[in-house]
Length: 506
Image (cartoon, rainbow, N blue to C red; front, side, top):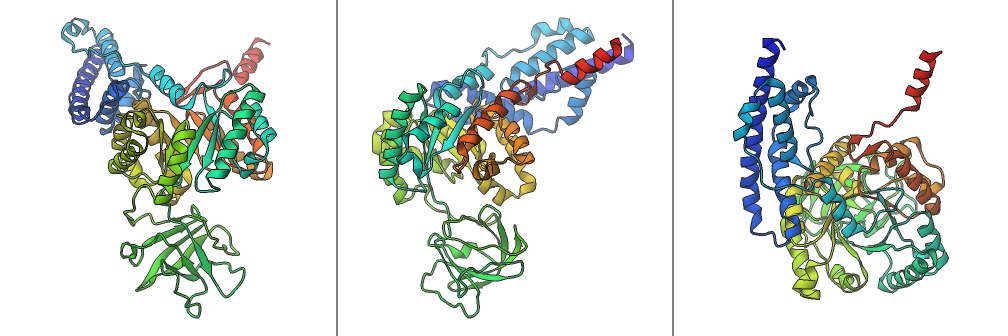
């Protein structure tokens, strides 16, 4: 080896040793802040690994990655599940390559043995149930009202690949939910397959409650104005073509001139142009259709730059929990923004079922806002310190708040953070949506469903072709997992490579 190359390796060795020590010290400092609140021993090592990962990822290590790759070493691109072990392995290899092996005798080693991906798989099984033998990613399906009256429909869903049944508490009522569960239990016996029940608590979503207009089928186009209010008595249709009423909006002081307003997961985008005592005037800036958009009740409203401090559980949510706590295998919570929301949820569960029983309930925290993404580590620590936990990437509201350009980036960040904490992920919103609704998938949907295989579970929404959607998603996941596990590409033999090899032999 040339002297120049050896010096370069020695320099890289010293740099990696310094990085490893900094990550170790900073990670331990962060973990010390969390430790007193962790009552669930199964999460202790996972929390520590998360702390090390956050310490590593607060640095820009791209220049270091390039230098490591040059020497055929790990570029730190797959450190999530075992941070210190990955760093230690690189340091040892650099010591061997540079001739500094004698210096490794005093090299600090962590006494803990981190479980890595096996721990993530264990957590996923405990919370989401066993994965099918032919694929590692589960399929969750939102049950339509039909499930309350048609047991055979549920049998078909199970036979095609449904592993988890989702009951959306924003729709129907407890009488319908209980009938769904009764039919599902019978369907499991018929199909010879178990299926977990996931209750999705609606949470404080701001929705359109009513729309007033002089035109029966008014469509709002770019440049049009509408009035947004929490005052049901406001009826000034003379000055505004549409009045959108939302009972939840009782904090209009948060909406200022130029504040963005998003409706129906980004189908319509506008900005506040004027404040009034009864509400705000919004001008449409963008719609999904040139001919305009009809605003309908029950569609969601998002305000990316405004903060509405609403209780994480509504009165309805608390009533729904009384049913869900008895019937559900998993409880999901919407619009969680910070650790205080987690504490409020855990306290409510403790009040209703008792402290010990509350700790055994598996929770799903839905990430739907940029604020939640920014606080994701503290959300994970607060929840997983006491309860089994999964994270759902709720891409509809998240895209509306963050913008479509940032969505894929945020998806990746959530997957990284969750893998570092050994927390399973549920990939949701618009998966094979056109297929489920219309019977034909788009090309983009096929790619999206393939990417969803990075998660431990993928959610399909209800639609007329949901049975076909499950079968297609099952096939996509099986095929994609022959080539990829999480972010790591599996280098199976490529057909194109085999063909090229045969050509050279001729």
